[in-house]
Length: 325
Image (cartoon, rainbow, N blue to C red):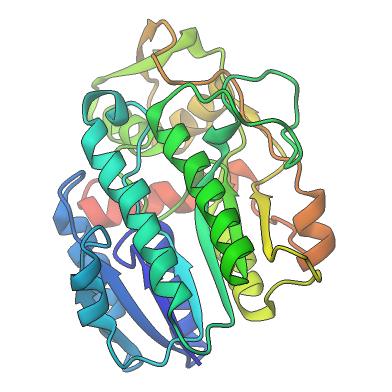
C-alpha cells in the first residue's frame, strides 16, 4: 500500500510516517521545508525517515500545482494524509499571504490532485480546533456552528473543510477532516508553548503567560494522535454517506489549565518559571475541549497519555535534542 503524506517533515507528518514505515508500508512524503521555524529540525526529522527503505521524499510546494503533479506523476497512491499547511494563529495576523497560499490554494490543489487520482481509497486532511472560534460552551462538538473564526488561520481551516465538502459532493471523493487539539510531544514545533516554556524555564528566561494564565487547553500527546490517524487512514470511512465527507474532533477530551501545565513543566525541569502575565492575544481563544464521542464510536479512538507523562517524555527528548541538562 502506498501512502502520500504532505507536510512529511512536519511534526505530525513525521510521526505518522514513522509508524506506517515500521508497519512496512510505502510512504511518499512531500514538504516545502519553509522557514516558519528552524529548517534544521525539519531536516533532522527527514534524516530519521530516510533510514527506512520504504520512504521516498520530494521537496514540493503544494501551492504550485504543476510542481505537485510532476513530482507525483506515475505514483500509485491509494491513501493520502494531507497535513501540509501554514501553521500558527498569531503568525497569521502578521503574514496573511502565506496562509492564503498554503491553506487555501495548496488545499485546493490537493483536492484537484485527489480528484484525478485513479484508485484513491481515502484522503484524510488536517483541520483544527481553532475553527470553533471563541465559543465558551464546552466541550466542542462537530455539530457546533463554526462560522465565527477569530483568526485568519482558523478561517482558512474552516474554508478547507467547506472546499472538501464541495469536492466530495461533486466528485464522490472520500474525505475525512481531522480537527486537531493542541498536539505536543517529542520532535514538536518550536513555536508552541510547550517548547518555548521548556526552553525559557531551563535557560532562566521570562515566559510570557497570556490572559494571565486563565486558559484551558485540550493537550493531546502525539502518539495518541498518530494511533487515531493511522487507524482512520487504514480503515477508511465507516459510514455510507450521500456526500462522503466527514469531520472528526481528535483530541484528549481532558483539558488542563495553563497553570497546571506550567507547574508540571517546572517540576520536570527542576526550576521555577520567571513569569510575565500578559492580556489575551488577538486571534487566541480562552479554551479548547474536544468531544471525541464520534471518533471513539467509529474508530475506537481512546487517548492513553496523561499530561505529566507526555510532558516528561517531551522534556527528556528536548534535553537530548538540544544537548542541555
